[in-house]
Image 1 (cartoon, rainbow, N blue to C red):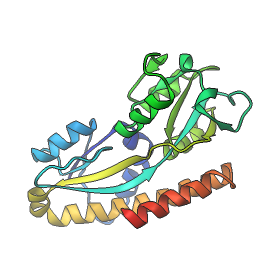
Image 2 (cartoon, helix red, strand yellow):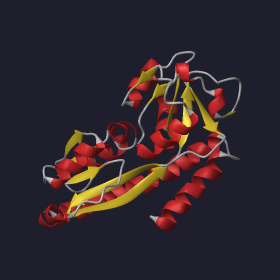
Image 3 (cartoon, helix red, strand yellow):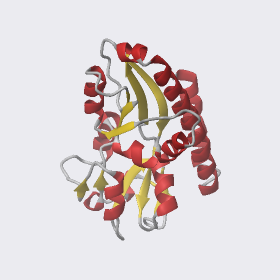
Image 4 (tube, rainbow, N blue to C red):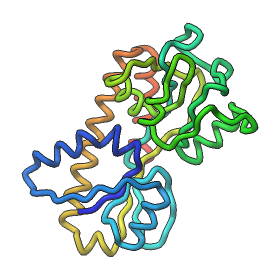
Length: 231
């Protein structure tokens, strides 16, 4: 099996999934490629990878697209900003922003609250790089799951936002022809991946409950309910 995955999903969501595959009863032989969303679609369309995990949805003939995970955003900083637990865009100084492009919906939302004429301090395409850049003033926005993993391994502060943010959606895509040729492997891989994602969502919910039982967990449950209802 060969898969193409965006950087943040590889580094923050799927690390334990790969460990699970090592212990699996099936003898998986897996090629993992870190790619951008458009590259993932191109490779799946060309049958050069079997399964893609992009962050955006595209309608392409012969390509099956399924949304498998969704989450909102929080603020990551080295220390608490303005001594507040809940932040609004006015509390966040663009001069000290590390911008990460979490998808088109996020970028449209971002331009509404952070004037595009004022460039951020840094623009990066990797949450790991953003964490390395953090200091006493810099901050960035990241999805719940990424934030919780960062909090486990780095000295930082996670703050909620006092307004709604766009969802960062993860999709699973396959080429219909290739999925038939490798039907058993593709079906088994998809099944294991979905099971893992659902377990991860429950873990994120538990962590959010410990972080702030009256805010983030309630909000995250509503996201999951909406996803299960509509997705």
